[in-house]
Length: 97
Image 1 (spheres, helix red, strand yellow):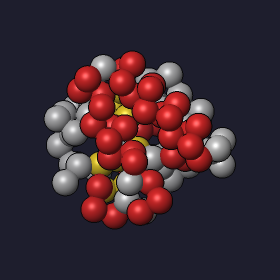
Image 2 (cartoon, helix red, strand yellow; image 1 turned 45 degrees about the vertical axis):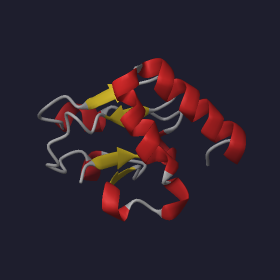
Image 3 (cartoon, helix red, strand yellow; image 1 turned 90 degrees about the vertical axis):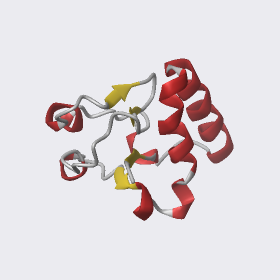
Image 4 (cartoon, helix red, strand yellow; image 1 turned 180 degrees about the vertical axis):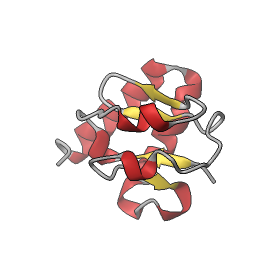
């Protein structure tokens, strides 16, 4: 299991979670922060720090945000891959609320 950053982070990108991450696994893309599952140690320090409640353990991620597993995992392919998936998500779902 790893942690996933979901839709509420789009266009917010509050950095409080980055500040508490002991392994620096949270990275910034154009419109969202993502957690690299290869670097995440599942400590959970980031989750309570998120002011928009966008961080979830993967196994408790709401079904409506399952696309964000792929978005976070895409960081391994580079920020451009993340940006492309976020753009496709927003285009398909409208502006995040």
